[in-house]
Amino acid sequence: MRSFSTLITSFIFCLLFVSNLLSWPANSFANNRIKLPDIGNTSNIIISGELEKKLGKAFIRSVRRSIPINGDQEIADYVQQLGDKIAKFSEQPNRQFNFFIVQDRRINAFAGPDGYIGLNAGLIMSTESESELASVIAHEIGHITQQHLQRAIEAASQMSLPSAAATLAAVVLGIAVPGVGPAAILAVQAGRAQKQINFTRSHEAEADRVGVQNLADAGFDPRSMPIFFGRLQKATRYYGQKVPEILRTHPAPVSRISDTAARAEKFAYKQVEDSQDFRLIRMKIRVKSKQLPSRELITALRNEAQQGTELLKNAAQYGLALALTADHQHKKARTLLVKLTQEHPQQLHYLTAQALNEYIDENIPRTLALFETAKQRFPTSRAVNLLYAQVLLHAGKPKQALTFLNKDLLNFKPTPKVYDLLSITYGQVKNPVRGFQYRAEYFYSIGHTKDAIIQLEQAYKAAKNNFYLSSQIENRINLLRAELNAPALL
Image (cartoon, rainbow, N blue to C red):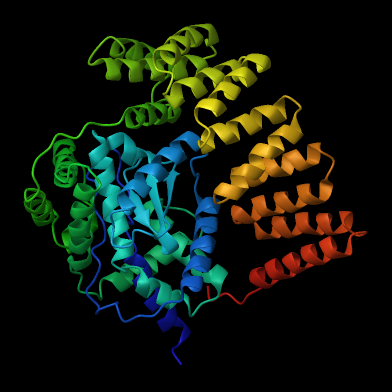
């Protein structure tokens, strides 16, 4: 039987190899991933798929509890669709990947168990093309499909589920976002352990190799990977920023850039155009980041709206409209958005921005009419579905909202936002039991298990006359209590 300290040290070793555990400011070299050590072939490790799914769900709950995750469904939809497009050409094309955005300006990306891949908002803003963003996603997918996470999952199987997921999230986020919870202590332990390992670049090179291939197969420019990494490296030298310790103790990335460039050159060159969705999503993130005072941002976007190609001008006008809406200049924003929507009726983002501008300006009838149009034009859009449900709730139409929310439950993996909306909706239709139940799932999904149990206890009291329902709720309470009280190794 291994000692407690040996088990913890071993697990921390493994967690360090998951992904890029350091974040740099947006103008510094982003690809400072800890090089995965060559500690033997992982292909013979047998990990239960059910265990990995459980660990993945617990991991994302810990992440949500620790750092702000993007709540904008349009941004989430775009990143998921882009990731799915690349994953379809990976070595596990049928695997479900889950992409999410971390609200952080620093450049970072990381992979977790069960196909969870996180991208910082700063990473998206630092890319100059959609292929560059795709290259980072392809690399993270490569870590998962090449089973680089298997040893971390193997170690996790020896810990209680909450402890394993919390440790994994704490190490990743503790180094990526210093000061998050208990992660500082774990980072110190991990730093000591790291010195005892002879790091190599084998796993990084392998993720790069499959990533370049996947990029080309998915129709993106494989040259974007070395271009992106090379530009960020030059930016580091230009700004004269202190090189992190990781680059002094591990192989320099120069050879990695040259390796990916050589691999990319094997593919015939073709010009790859950015999608307009990419431009609009970057613009939306830019406006939401509030890096500039609103007046300065509006002035900058007005200037940009007069330059470049028509598509670039449209993207700048869209960003300007968002900035004007945020600055409560609804009439000016409306003029821009009506024009964009009329000229480009099949561009989802223009129409939803117009509807939300009306919503914020409290023109509910006009908002509902615009979302009805959006629903007809984009029937499969999750963002439209959820935004419409939210507006219907505000308009006092909970039964109609429930139709759209149940549709989301049927077609997608539930998010905290969906659980929250369902809780409110069932409260409005006078079904307190379901309201409490979904409120409990909301708390549980963001890592607040104790609060979830409290909500379930309220649901149990409200369901006392329904034996089947109260038994169902009691079972859920017992399950969460058992998970909460599981002996932790930390």
